[in-house]
Amino acid sequence: MAFFVAPLQAQEQEQSDERYQISVPRLQMLGQAMHAQVAEKKLAGIATLVWQGDQIIHRDQAGYQDLEQLKPLTDDSIYKIFSLTKPITGTALLMLYEEGHFKLDDPVGKYLPELADLRVEIADGPDGELRTAPADHPVTIRELMTHTAGFTYGRFSESQTDRLYVENDLQNIDSTLADMVAKLGDLPLRQQPGTQWHYSVAVDIQARLVEVLSGMAFDEFLHKRIFTPLEMVDTGFFVPEDKQDRFAVSYTPTDDGLKPYPNDPWLSKPSFLNGGGGLVSTMDDYLRFARMLLNEGELEGVRILKPETVQMMRSNQLPEGVEGPDWAPGNLFGLNVAVVTDSEAAYYLPVDTFWWWGIHGPWAWIDPANEIIVLGMMQNTDYRHSRMVHATVSNILYRPKP
Image (tube, rainbow, N blue to C red; front, side, top):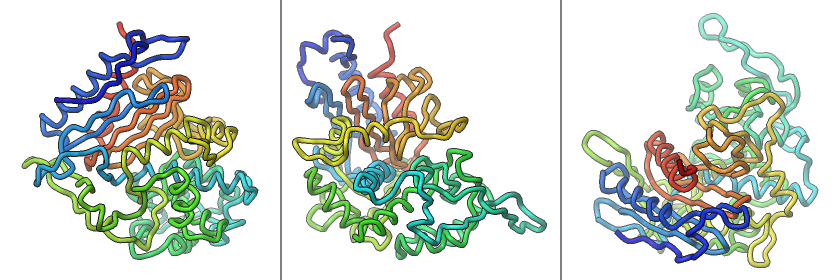
């Protein structure tokens, strides 16, 4: 077993000038725990990286990007990042906010007329007939960015509206963002806007807003305004042929071992530019994006967002009385990111850490108080196990010593 840990003298002390410094023993424990995940055949492979003090202080790959071929993970392996796409989409929309294209409390229907005058599911009627009532106010862009707009995904809860999402195949890979928004205009909201945090296609709607407000296809906007300036050279909506030998395979745990999940949908450019979960990326690319956010919108002389915009993004934006994700205790929600408000409840992530993750396991934690970024990349379809891995990592790195 071998993993990189920077030999910083400051790491021998966990407090330096009131800033928490992750110690060498903790970083070594992190590497050992992740290698154990592979040795015990719980994961095919996992990569971890910790950034602090303007440098990488830990970097490791355990296991394989392709288990059948015994091809190990490398520094430049490419991963399906799924919902780690969401902070990138939010950044794109906030760039247009800074340019004056909209205000956060503007009605979404002002820019996407299909989403004006929406109705809300109120109860199942006789024989399963859907009953609705008018929304009590127009959905706002802020509500889109906080998952309080009333939309859903169709697969993380059960309701008449969720069933309609499935029947209408909202995120059909052969359709477009415009097609999805048109379908949404004919469907009810799951609940009244502004009343509940509920995971949803709201970030795909944000991607469509980027297209309408900028006059550019969503992928074109991301490449021109974010990926190229930040030198995120391997990030996009598909893996080109000349990079496919670096593309990690996802695995599904079964009683007969880890079974591969097809990579085919990511090998050519899709019609549906999934703003909520469609990107592929590498550890180094996502580190550059995270460093930009940690540095309040700027990286190596390139400014993507203003400091005050990043501060707004990473601050709680939920309506008064609305709680954060029920599966992420100790967190409220900013703009496309969760925000830690109770460290112990959040498995010891520091207060004000902002973060998100993808359903095949990759995660990003940005801890501004201690100037720490923790990234993990894995391709595991058992999201419950992935969340256990996340909790293991945060406990190793941050849990106070008894």
